[in-house]
Image 1: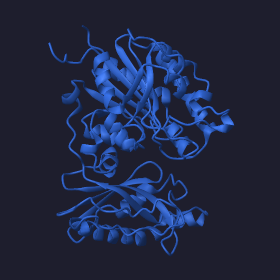
Image 2: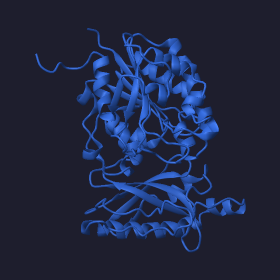
Image 3: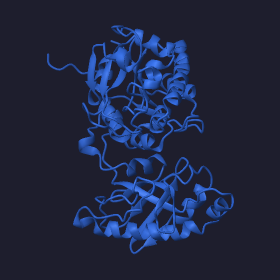
Image 4: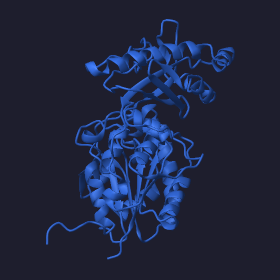
Length: 409
């Protein structure tokens, strides 16, 4: 029995709800998707709960679950994955955070959580803070995409059980990180000191002085959230018997894959924004499977999630139709020895502007699939035979790739 390889395409935040202006259809139902629909007609289809029914999955916890790692056991916070995804060294005992460069007023009230979606100058801002030492703790900062960054605290007796500095809302004063357990009091105290020192540095930085001169919002504070310590994840190859890689544009997902021992396949065109090279991601993934000796490749396309968060259903339709165009390339070169799974990590309904607990559509293609689909969307896929949780996915992929061990005689 010949073993196959697997391509898992995660269309981030794809799932949605019925929208009045789209004739009470979801963006995926409304969009013209002939190539996704063709794959569905060759596939087993259904619905998947990324974590469990009704659970609002984060991108981090859902990707962990889809890759076969129980988030209830291994997840400590998003920060370590963001840092690892930016190629920062996260050592045992470090506490890591995801951060935003943001804009605050003189009273430390947040006026823009993304500093006007700043795109330039964040490297210089991060370098101005990188390496700061307070008492016996060092602080390391690295910029990410646009306003995003990661922060690592390194020193003795640190504990990640602290609240966020980021208030998560415009018009609210930044929080003082509070210790959620007595052992975290030092971590909270030093983080608060770092944030204030960083504010004094950033508000006088030449990058921000120039932004103010141009009428732009200054990135005058760093807002940490999602504290955590790097979890131990069993190596993906050892766990599933497949050499894994990822083609992603977001540091979060890249970091999860790196910590799991999967190899990132990078390109400057693979961003976590609308303008990512969708066809290029699929092309690189197929090349990795066919020519670079990988057995499993995960592709993440972030754009649907952005449109959902921005509450723009027409934009989400546009993004989905661009994705469908990239699927034409996949159909034209689809190798016979590769299993293809297409799904989402969670729903991000445009009517909500955030993740929801709604199930997502899924289709699984193999050369000998029980072809049952009619179209790839939330409603048509609900008529298929699959009704699974995210934790089931890797076991199903093992079966379709002829790699599953037999249970019993």
